[in-house]
Length: 511
Image (cartoon, rainbow, N blue to C red; front, side, top):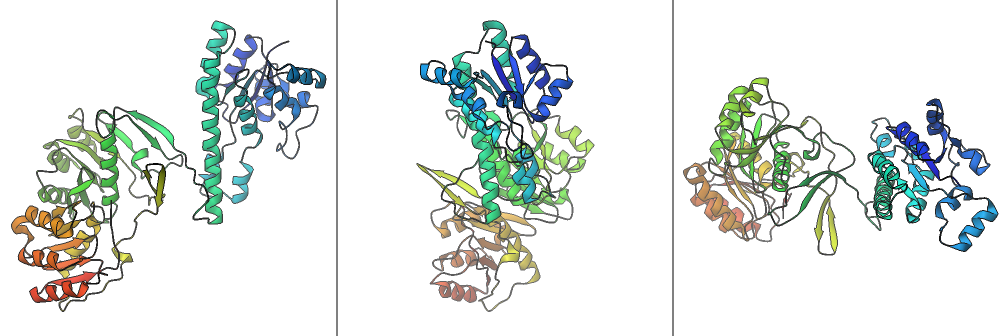
């Protein structure tokens, strides 16, 4: 009895060559719908699915392969005498190879004008069912879902006359990953459509982007996966123009730099080191913004990552060239800027579309044996409920400093304090166990620059010691969420020193 293969694909790349190879190896090929027509038009002798099932394709193709003649041929255990007896009695011929890929559900829901009805029609039923049947019975059935594996199958058939159990098992595992990812996209789409916020189970899928040399440290293995729904504003879909591959730490830092630079509408430059901003500058030009970001902390920027929200021009590129930097991210680079920066072999240059407003997914954090999920912190100054509990109101210049500090402190590890002045950060206190400790670090970094600056805090003051430290440093304005049972102590202390204090009603903890 001839070996049989069943072929039904949406992605038709390489399928004619693959089926030609199968027929050359003595396979009889069954096919369906558009795949059947394509293969026939190519001059290949293939059998229609209805010739096997003795039943027409019905309901616009919704039902064609869901039939005992197909699934009996896939699931029958060849070493089981009872299975084989039933197959012989019922005239079911074994199917030895399945080549199926699925309706383009992802591509359908990516369309801006997709309707719910279109999405539903592009949910494949028969394809996943055949794949799962074949993969379950992989001891006897070879199953291929990825055109990249066509050559693997043909090579083993040519060299050995069959496909090894090891290869069948590997391909079966790939099938179940594929169908799980496919089902995940569907379940998440439908969950969003019905507005379910806390489903009883939560399944996500990501696609391999690259294997990394290592993780945070050389002894840790690491891999980079990206969300299946592309977004041009994401580091996962950035266009790398130059430099060596990104590392695990590069990717994390670059993502943080992007999150911060998105806070700014005017020209801005953000320098990030170890997941915290070390310098942020605004300006009327990108060169001016860079000068301020550099001046904010000329020590920590060394070996850092820059995110820029305007095209990098030649003048700015020449200044950047003077430093050792890991990555520069921008919407674009001028031709002249590229000539300057690409002279550094290892400097990574990435372009990202910052004009696209990112659709932030949930933030996921693994814990031992579990997963935490929360909304991304996307609230900005415009979302705040501003109150000014102190006697003195901020001046226009203080407002500018306060707004800049508030944009940046949101992205600093808690406990966080940021000092801002003259369109730049001048001090950052990050990740401290108490708030006054974070303030002291920021003040020490700022030095004399702290006089006349604004202090931003990611959370309220539990006592007035931070205000006291700010006053001694010459800070004249403070912005914080408010809401402590001891707010009045901080307000009185601010009034004592003539400091203006703004409450936002929004906390920005970042752990």
